[in-house]
Amino acid sequence: MPIVKSFAVGNGDMFYIKHNSDNFTIIDCNLNATTAEERIKELKRESQDKGITRFISTHPDQDHFGGIELLDDQMPITNFYVVENQSIKGDETESFKHYCSLRDDLTKAFYIHKGCTRKWMNREGDGRGSSGINILWPDTGNSDFKGALAACNGGESYNNVSAVIRYKLEDGASVMWLGDLETEFMEKITDHIELPKTTIVFASHHGRDSGKIPDAWLEQLDPQVIIIGEAPSRHLNYYTGYKAITQNTAGDITMECAGNKVHFYVSNPRYSLDWLDNEDQNTFEHYIGSITVETDYTLQAKAA
Image (cartoon, rainbow, N blue to C red; front, side):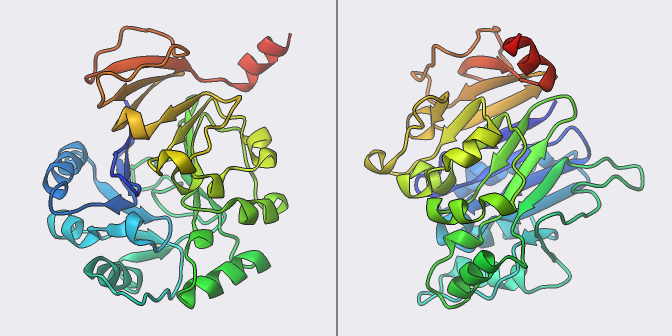
């Protein structure tokens, strides 16, 4: 069954999706000499039976591509999904140089944008199913995005070229990533992005107040769970009124998507939440509870 995992990497992001099809997806990375061996070993183990592996880069910030050269050395990246850009850095780390080499390699790079399609990202073909991933942003013709891209290419700011990525299981959960989009930018593009109801949303900018998801977005997304990243606690927005998991204290978060259920596991054995249902799962260590995925039918039943 599909697995979505968020690694606790400190100030940064790193995720993978083990799909229910012949697909494996890595979203961003933040590796160093201490953590790389163990995490890459897990990625190789979990992807070994998959025919297609892709890496999706949300945006060109060090804490989202750190150690990509270590990953590429052990798991060669042949499908690099990236928002097209020509970002520059005053301090060109080895990871940034490697990111640029992948970004600019037309045999490996696929430039993602709102509504783009690709076999087997969101199209079936040749006997292989789709991964269920769709790109909701950027709209490369949008004036606000063009301004953000100019700032990125000028080395001023990189957050607002972030892709919005949604993974949807047929008759099951959906998950959304927002990269490091900032609140003010999200407010500007509210009328230019489609935001379907989504089960689990990873808070933008590691859960910081500066990336607080606007109310207009939350009303449309109507998430059952918001996962708040590892920004320092004093900078976090805890999304009052929503169910949240805080990675600062939970550690690694593993989500097992089983039919209309999502079972949550964490690496911190002392972490617990009283709003999750106990369904006595044991696929992984440190099970903390489950949710039942809300559908149009269940929402109508609730309203009645």
